[in-house]
Image (cartoon, rainbow, N blue to C red; front, top):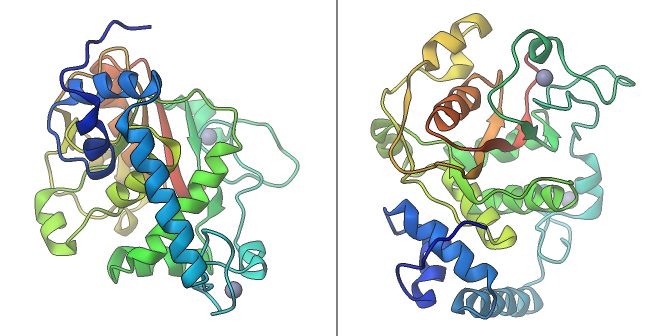
Length: 282
Ligand SMILES: [Zn+2]
Ligand SMILES: [Zn+2]
């Protein structure tokens, strides 16, 4: 284990973990080790938070966001609508690119040609109806409850995977101009939910977006890699850290791969990608 001395008492750990209010990446690492030792206030706050959520759901039972029927515990989705979500069941074992049925486990053609900088992408769903509507509503209509549902679905999926647990979550940063247009970063909102449920620190301070690039979805696949090249900068110490990049939809994978390249170049020991949905990049 690394020898990292906590810089501040555990009392402030939970604030940063839940609200991402610090700019000092070293503090995140220190607090994580503090939390792992058990008994810090973060654990207490998470328990109180979970208790409040249980009371809230007792008073106001969850409703399915898609059809309005009664939801499930801690999930605003009924069992029928949950079963209708398009699972990314057959996919590349590295980048989660959807594959033809029966080719599992396998590398897709793109990963065979160019090994990604990230070790693995986890994306439980395909970017298709009705999931695409949930993501669009969350992203462009600021329906934060829909984002919470998406974050909880992703979290439940991650819990079932045999993954190498990351030290820190890194939401894909938005350029300040795009952030002021949209009002919030959907990747950060998802990462905050994952931070609470998975008890992994999240920071938006380790990476910055240098250029306000055109949306990847508006470009042809071959233009996407060029569009995103050198769009990010690492602004903190990631030496030896295991990281998970968090995004909403992984389309060609060019954005997360470029961010992973920067993080690996800055010394990260491992980079995973966690996204709610994968669009086919064939
Ligand atoms: Zn429903
Ligand atoms: Zn692949």
